[in-house]
Length: 290
Image (cartoon, rainbow, N blue to C red):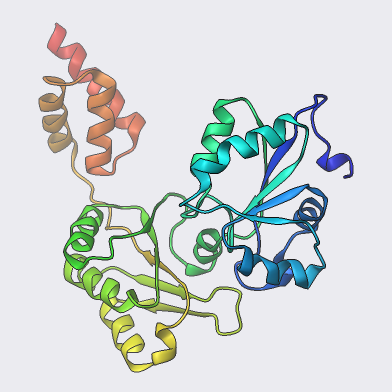
């Protein structure tokens, strides 16, 4: 292993958390290839799936399954391997591990034990979708997969009614239509929705419009109901309030909350600048103390 992959000056091994292609195999980085070829063992979400990538690049490293049903049981084995000085890698079926994929239990426990854990960044459907959606990305909310059941999913969608940030979700092929229909029911047709399908793959498509428009397109084209989906929802319009209304809100909040907590909550509720709200809250508090 070259200098870029060398461990700290101790005998403990390193667990490399490696991002792998989300579709196009050419997206595997040189560093990721180097790591996967050099470690003693690769922990993979589905070894059968990962063998395609390994065969494509001629990687001969041994694979062992590590998924949500067995990762807790693998902690001791992985810990012992690292303590023995062996380097291991963790990969998911596609993209960056732990992002709506297994590995959290393993990484958290190993970190608590002081193990060496190193990220080898690369493909992520979440970031890839945001980069081409044309929606604001200075702040966004990622909620992974919503509930598979309609009533629970609609309840979850209600939390985006006042959400001003872009929302990013993952969805499966057999639920994409139901998800969009629930978006329409809960959030209406005023929000722009972008659906990215099969990113980096041969049949990649990106659709955007209102929920109603996307439902019509996807209902009319069976191909648009195949593959893996990233669903992005534009945030609610930011509302502004005048200083009298803001002052009234802060006066009430300051009766129950500390200064900083009251100002932060008022800023969130009114989509106002935090510092401006804090200064007004400070002024109100000082006046009330006179």
